[in-house]
Image (cartoon, rainbow, N blue to C red; front, side, top):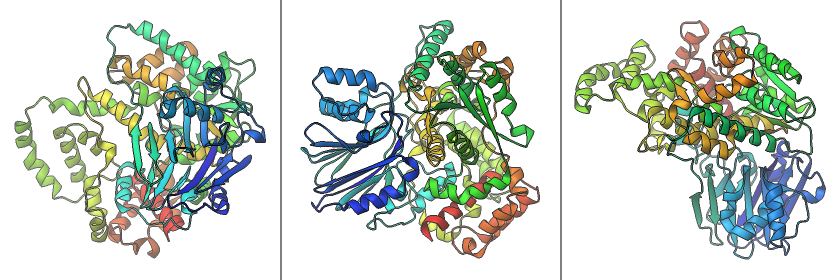
Length: 625
């Protein structure tokens, strides 16, 4: 696992190695073990390395092919690199290292961009093909590893983090207000935008080609299947899925450094730990985070799994005073990011890194197997979907129109949203339900100046997932979350929190073969009634304590509402109610004061909105002011 950065000048001028070094200095945490830089002609490539496979200095990228005409920097892990290496040796390629980085390099020589079809793993890499004067950059299918870029008229600058790009004096830090508006809908900035004008994310499952004249082409190279099987029994599917999971875990246990697992107390991480323990000759090291508030604390369930498999178990309690680390988190996330579980994820990663360099996690179970409670809740809003559209509109328009004229922050606004959920179809129904700040709330909170800045069409691609033939609400929501919520929120959270602590996290449930297999299964193998993860639970019942399998699902978020009324109340006021924030001109001061007052006094729970607003203000102070 590493951090990469670099620049290409299209006008032929050289790239200063000192610039690449400054870019790498911003991401030392991603690769504390070693550093490599290659500058030649109009190209500069750099990498900070966290050594996991082949720990020698010789394996530090940038690496070149045999004649030095193709160079690569790479962040990630390729789990099938050993077999690919043997195939490439048979084809006559000479290797100088035992690293997976060099495998990608020679595979590109052999297959060009089709090399991506052979890679099984998580990755973001950039290849400089000197012969063709071509940049080839790619990101893994599920978006586990990030890649950002800034394309100006005379250059292309890239990095694993935005701060690596803004270390280049030629790149200005200008807020992208339409992306910020999207952030206040999603709690993250959706791809391909970032919160900075002119800086983009390479979307997951895409590659980028940039020629000598600076012409850029983006191409999608993978999508999960959309046709489901009707010729398989659940017993057969259970057997096949367990074999896939077992292999996926085995591949991710290969490392030349200490390895462990993140154990949350749920069936996803519990199943991962069980499969690890069954394939290991020594006790697995497990790591768990909990809270003092019992309703949010899953440590008792994590302990049950740890005891069953005699793991070397470690625990940590997150308390509100530990939120003093928030400015540091804002710095690491580079963009405003409002998933509050980033805080415990950071501390879990910090605890884990004290003992191991690599950890496996249970990420991906909900998106692949229908684990979110909202899937069943939202499906119930489809009861009117069979009502003819004209009758539907006539029935709801007067009520919704009257409600829309009410304040966007009161009880009537909630009634309006319920009416809107009943009347609309997908994806609008999902957008309304999932939004952090609802449309009515934005109308009440946004200042006229901010409304003017975001008045143009936002082009929010996070809601553009098409409704395909044969789709149902469950499959559409899962596919949407795999394509947007998973890579732009959950994978960002895991990647940033772990790499801030120089920890590599691997996700067996997000192996693309597992994802493809799950996508083809009948919906009722995943969701039945109000119960999700049907087939995964069948496997887990043989591996985990019954109490873990049957417990009610809980997320990884802290008790935010309580914290913002107690230990974090002063920080909340100091961030959102001081003149620096109120003079920013984005929000109506009285509306912000009302939100804070209602929440702190217990009149209403505005915690997720206030957290999003607080993270945004802290981002402005860190990166823009």
